[in-house]
Length: 387
Image (cartoon, rainbow, N blue to C red; front, side, top):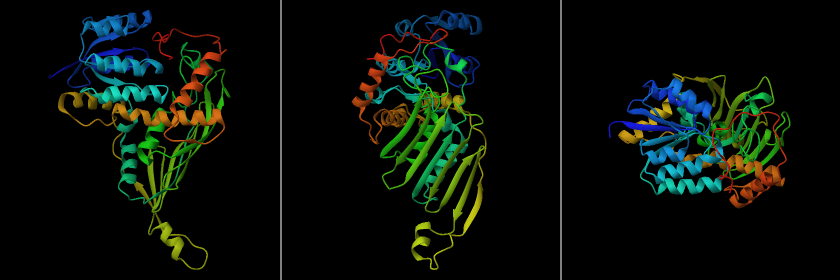
């Protein structure tokens, strides 16, 4: 195979963006061959804006049955990500799925098992892993330059959303349609980067507010505490209700502190181990000598396009995936644990109790009385994806 025929399922905001990249020849070795959506307006957009030879289908099943593609990109609402991924793999197609991997880990674990049993390339659209800034931060931690981690803090409150955003689609802002709020929609990238750089914690205690700033039933304000296996602690704060927001990741280790903010990395490097200084320094006061280092980071990365290129190269050339699809469960496990902690008013150990989370979510869907004041058409039929 020297050219991949790609189909896109769901051509809303993200799907249409991927379609343009492929149509414009931005992804070497990949060509857009088909798109599908259940929204007639989006199909009209495709017929108007895309090349006439690109096939247009009214359902994912029609696209699968046409056997006109070698690979699919899934850009639908969250609940459909695992079933469509598994359907694609079963049809012998390579898959690239938008974030999040799904709504609950029980379903995503089943998806990962299907991917492991397949010989196809399965990637996730974690485009933030493509940014040199994040890659350099991960390299600093992985290299041991910072020593053992002591504390991680991420304040990410730049996700402000107005009420009109939530009203823009009938699938948004409800347990039935979206399965969560800021943790599941805005923060999968941040949660993925947090664990990608710092590792997974062993337990979580979270406080979530539901509809605090908006007329929605899902969470729009979160403060979560975590503990790591080595005794380090962490804090994650996010909301869609604050302006002006902050985006600051601070990681402290035994050999200093790194701060990522305003697209810069600053490393306050201690001349000696903090633990060693603490043990051996007389006099009761003082602190380790510290050097402030501005870490050079080149380029901005190609983000979404970079993931598309990496996925294409993985299929055609065996290139290693920057964001394997199986990695999607990690950020989802963090968001599931945070919600379960808020619902139970208690600490939650990781791995999360999948049955407990799924049961609570189903109860919220069943008892929901939430009604939108206004809504647009959804991208897919979610009627059979909740169980």
